[in-house]
Image (cartoon, rainbow, N blue to C red; front, side, top):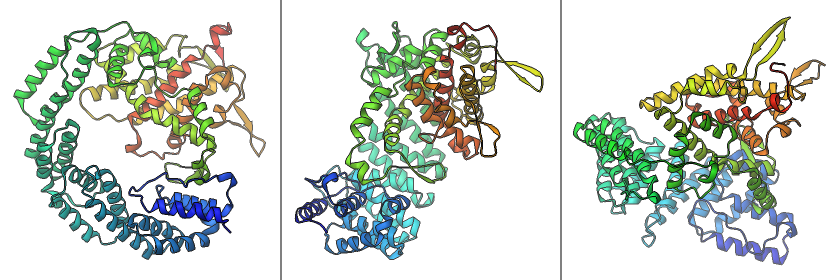
Length: 587
């Protein structure tokens, strides 16, 4: 039973929820203290809060399933009292998970459609295209899944594009249509022309590009070659607006490097447009600009540890990729230039966030590649979600450095192999005896095939061809585990355990990464990289490859770069020279 003060808190919260216009919200009730509130108020506030989460039935039932009847009664009562159609749709949507009654999901879709019309006609808000698309995407997803009024929805969306709504709202509608695959290509044959018209009226380069790329997407599906060539020419023309003027001063030395990247994109677009005159003009401009590129002496992480502006990033890529090959490899091995969040930053964030109201209202869950859910420790959830924020940028940054270094002939497979063959890196001579036979090897020999394939794929990219990362990722990810096992064994760490049948078995990678000796060899930053890349705290690459869960589309450059960084990071191990061991070590 709620106390009078708790009833007041809940009523005021419900009144605030009536004003919500966005599909997601972090609105919390005023004067609400989780620790001092009754279990009933906690439950109801958590239910309201989760109504604006990204719905997943399994998660909702895990959190609220034990009080399903209470949740159903509360939501049914709320549906009869609210006036906000978006809020009503959210309640119906949530109610469906508890009742599994299709009528409730149909009511949710109808309510979302009413909310969409209100948003469409909110002419005072000239930036409503973002929240409009969020509601629209929700309607499309549910309508497709439950096969509800699809033809009616399609007709309405096409009608929207024929009305006098502002251009950016039309762009976002078209974007949703393309993403949803709700329409067959022939049903959208008039859309590329509309996109070109919108692009011609746009003033901002980014929005011009968005419309042109949408037009190109549909034209490619329609196999309209003439239109494809025209759009690629327009994309090239649009990129010219990104070329910056360079006054020759040291303050602007990054500009020619940025322009180089832009000219390459322009040339690629013009090649696809088959416009020889514009191709030749762009190549000439590229070569002229290239002569303006200059380099300064680079000092470690000074650029990357500064604010990550485009200028700093481009400057860093150019400078690092033009260093001596051994310096490039060393920078990647030690990782000081990489803009991952440091462990100190992560620990501070976790410490400040671990008692947050969000974690009390929503149970942290993770989902594997097969969409199985697993409850996650709150501190791990916070830690690796923060770590993940910098992964896409860092992987793309490293990939750009390596592609630039390869293009500039600063580094190649043979140069990289020669550097890593040193016993300062992965060339430590090792041996193992099997069945009385002594086998001699180095860690470099274990990864050599994967390393060669990495450079082969990079060279394909530089030739504007599609790479296939399967061999690289499969080999390097599995060899990481083998090398790490060797390292732990060399420092007398535990690498086996006794199973329930009394047999000695090798520890799994997750167990190895929890080994006590790991912390004596590698830093916390290193271990965060390993844990995020290989375990279910992050990408879980080792498990997904070992069990063949990955399909061809799952083999991405980002995963390859993360694994490559992990393998290179193992080269920090200096057991031989720090411990003064003999020149060959027996495992």
